[in-house]
Amino acid sequence: MEAVAKAVPATGWLKKAELPLVSIRGNADKAFTSYQLVMYPEGETGAAVKLLTKKLKEIFPAELKIHSKAHIELGSFYAREEMEETIIRWIQRICNAESRFVVTMNNFGSVPPHVLYLRIQDHQPFFRLISKLRVIDNYIFLNGYGEVEWSSRPVCKLADQLQPGFDHSKIKDYAKLDYHANFLAYNLVLLKSTSLEEEPVVVNVFPLYP
Image: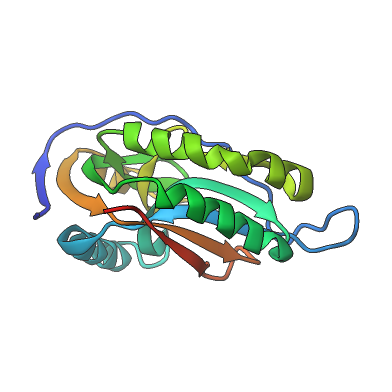
């Protein structure tokens, strides 16, 4: 499965609310950790996307925060680390009953001044998975920090946090390109980080049923 690029217009995005800074302390003065549920492009497409992010680092060495691994975020939340075992157990149970599915990425998109991404053509498989994952909502809300932020329109994020004064016309050039590639989603991945500066680390990988 190879990625191709052609000049075709592309528009559209549903804004995602921003979350507060990490390392927030609760009423009991216990530190909260930031978590993300993501999927990574797999196989040949994953390799092609990795080359794409490498190229972006060459073009925008200072202006953009290029993700070390492009990813599709399904949800994010804050919780205490001692809650991980229960969260992992529930997510594992859900993924054991869910099948792998094909993800098709089609065209670039951007939301200045925050994100550069690849659009996902069919969101329904993600919405079905998210609907099952909502079983963790009450647990996170009652014991963590606020509500789980589920993605209302999943995209494959390439970069974010544009610097002030950035020339947005450079990003618009990407929004005019048609990028088409697909991959089979094998795993859901739980990440965590304790600061905005550090790269998230993998907590657990949840395979989907073949």
